[in-house]
Length: 214
Image (cartoon, rainbow, N blue to C red; front, side, top):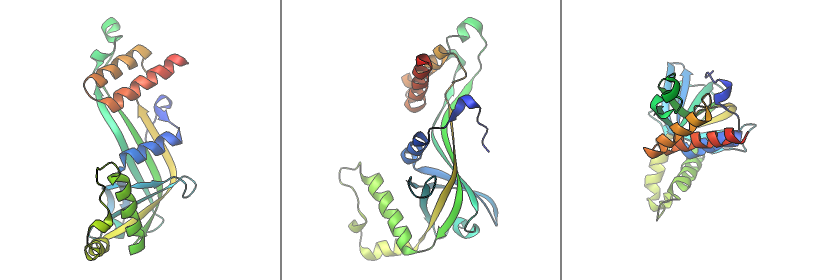
């Protein structure tokens, strides 16, 4: 289980779902017949399927992960939104008391679940179609599966296998200097935004505003 001090715990499930959907690329960690393995795969999340939602993806048929696991095995999928180095120079309190050290902040979601392998054309076709619609939506002219010859799509679909992960537990860790003074959180967040690390920087600034409102 990931180590999560209470001040870094993110328990808002809607936020964790949003992180999964925005990041999409997850690290699927398995412990199958061949031992520990990790694969980096784009996932789609169905929030309403099952008690805690379900993840869907596909892998190359030549990837042994799908044949290395058994239906029902527990797996872990890690989604990382962003990370950033934190310099103690960014903390105003450092310049007064000199009691700060470097750190690293990040936003991650760990998803635990039970795996099911789908070696069938209907499943993988649906998964590819949904992933395509989502990630092509921002393109000026979105690509569609029907843009390619049917014979080519059929060949490609036979070369992949579907994997479903029924979520049993979601754990979020947003390490954003919440254990520091508000001015330190704000100072480091502002420094990150200034240098272009917007995701972590803006998340820190939001945490600082929330702390001020309490």
